[in-house]
Image 1 (cartoon, rainbow, N blue to C red):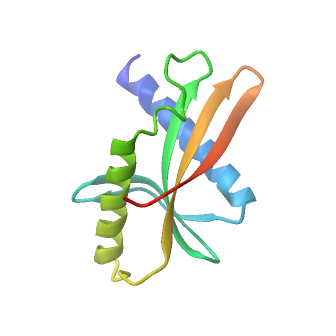
Image 2: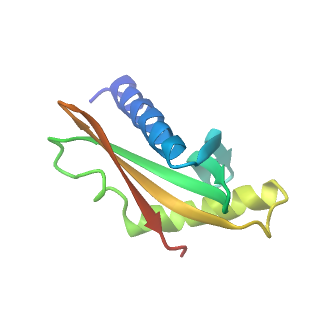
Length: 120
C-alpha cells in the first residue's frame, strides 16, 4: 500500500471515529496533536473531562483487525502522549481517560467499536 493510500485510510478512519464519538457526546478539540513523544490521533472532551483517542482503521479483509492493532505498546505510548499533552497545556490535574476507536471498513459501510482503555 502506498504512503498516500495509507494516509487516506487513516484520515477516513479518524473522520469516521470522530462522528461516532460526537454521537456519544464526545467532541473533538484537536486532531493529530503533536507532542515531543509523538502524535495523538484525537483529543476530545465530554462532561467527564479529556478523552485521548487512538484510532485504528482496517479493511474487513485485513489480516490484523482494527481491535487487534491496538496493542499494549500502543496503549503505553498513548498514556505517555496524554501526560505530555496535559503537562504542556497546563492541565496536569484534569480528569482524563483513553479510548481506542477501532474502525473497520466494510462493503456495507464502516463500523466503529469504541473501547475504553486502562491507563498504564
